[in-house]
Image (cartoon, rainbow, N blue to C red):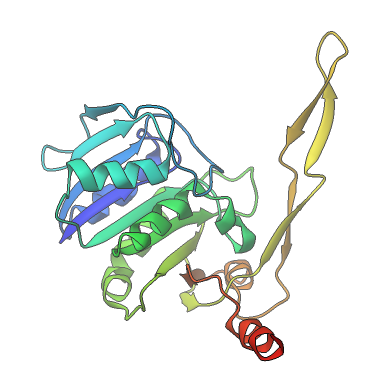
Length: 250
């Protein structure tokens, strides 16, 4: 199996090392990741600047790794160009240093790596550590162990075109795994105004995540209940029911 790995936390992120160590047990691995953290870049790509690629020493001699001065989408496309010009069998993105639950998938660079793999016709999986308390220390071994135990299910699940898997693993031994839909994870007080030392205002964006965990059969509910959540995400964003209704009235 030919496996391309990327992330949005950068080439030296511990989650990347964890996912690569597992993948190397199942196939030939090439890592292509950003040279620094690129969180919340969504599905952006570099268009008006050159991409520089440097090979770096990583894990073991059998794992080739490259850093790119770009975004996760860039890394997937560069990886397919320099590593797997004939295509590969699997794109893995992660392990992210935090959750990608609900609407997070629209912002996440980790998820974008899996999106780009899917666009290229490759089975793709995004994996994140779903810590719900920012003061927790992330245990990436839990994510790696979960991936190892569920490898066959993830890599053999029957998926239609344009669908990838978004995985959130709890930061404690999971009770099990649930296949669920997307929940709603929004942020309150997203933009905070502050002042610099000269009294000039500036704005800091972030906010506190608000988890609606009441809705069953969602990724948020599953994680809050102590389970790993696997969500099939389709890149066909068309609302076909609304489309049919609009076509009838046209």
